[in-house]
Image 1: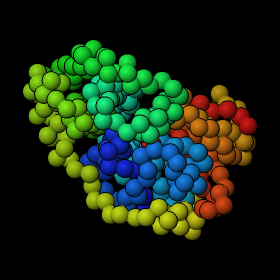
Image 2: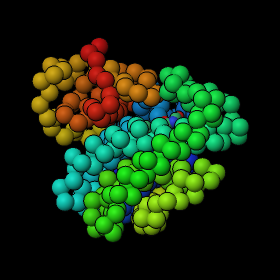
Image 3: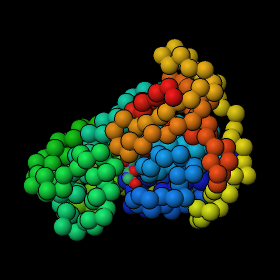
Length: 306
Ligand SMILES: N[C@@H](CCC(=O)N[C@@H](CS)C(=O)NCC(=O)O)C(=O)O
């Protein structure tokens, strides 16, 4: 199988989610460091406009969004499973709390606390990424409020671990743990007084250590130019059979546009390859990489004909 090529940067919180999955599954991967803000001229030929971090590439297949990336990793590398005890539905749905509410609360707290040290160019990019919905002055004023909000949610995590279990769903780690962990990883590293947040939660603190011990797998560096060359010289893989899709009523080959429904709302256009309950794949041509197939999740992404 072609190598896993991971486009990310060290400080990206969402990128850490997948790095922890690499560790959990003991995977080797190639690390391509991308800019932490626009422009990303060596990523756009692969994604067709999708700008968020991270992105995974395998040959000429490109996977956008951590939900889609992790689903593909579980499909290709089913052991050890991210879903011990049949926890798949619970883990994905927990991810909508952690990716949206928990993450947004954590970013508001951290950005508010370090507001005076943030690079204005970075803030400007993040305002654009959120479609204007990011107000640093408000975050600065609301640090105590957001600390309370975050601690209330950490209280739920402490309760998940209250009976002495090692991980969120029992004795085995899984995606449910990873979904919570990556957000706390960011708070732990960037919030200037982590004890104010983690202090009351002894079980969460011990669990953080167990999660960190999963590691990040075995990365080796790759340049962006090498990654583009891999895409150019590879063929997209045949897509797995699509689930039923009575909602779109589109046939393979139809022109479609896919766009995230929250952040980084850049439309990506292509030809429909396969649309299922949980993922959609579209084919695109690009002058630098030729034909690629770009994969997105369905949950959290809008799909339009045309
Ligand atoms: N739903 C996306 C969210 C990704 C996301 O918001 N990533 C942040 C970095 S942690 C981002 O893209 N920031 C803007 C950038 O890197 O250009 C996912 O799960 O991958």
